[in-house]
Image (tube, rainbow, N blue to C red; front, side, top):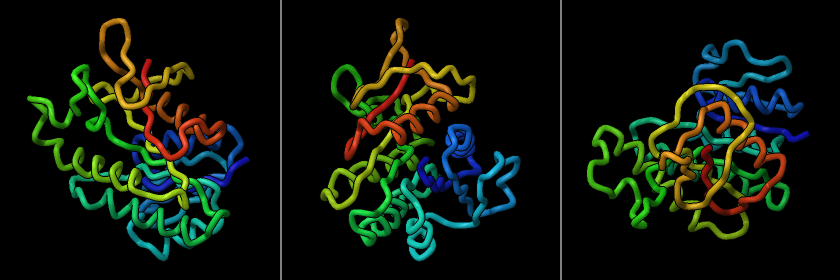
Length: 214
């Protein structure tokens, strides 16, 4: 059993990660800026009001955690790097006993068949750019870290990522989307959550990014 703190636990992905981890018997703390948004939590899950950019709050939660899961987002690109800074500072301060960090990343930094980031490819939607550049900067921040912090950045597919069903079946890749027979990369939020908790249970991508798809 791991002690898992999920930031952004009221969101579409965060809520599913909380449910997946709780179903496996982990000790889960669900964190949201508005604790009232944490409705219908599984039995045994602790609800906490908190902000990933509040360093003292993050540090306090990190003391009793094995894993910090970051599923926060928004149109302010600085949110993502501020989240990385707060989480990594808290983990580093605790030394070797500090928690691992698993970051719900973005798909825009994945590479297409020509080795070009989807963010840099022609036609990338303008309305998604603030979110995408924030996640790209977050990944860059993790890659610049030394080995005093253990992290994993999990990218969903760049386009087809939506609520659906949990099958428990998926494939993993590294810097390019995992595509099906039709050439498209897809994953449901439910199977993304399963993949993320699988990484908690059986770490295979320490201090690197990976991605998942069917």
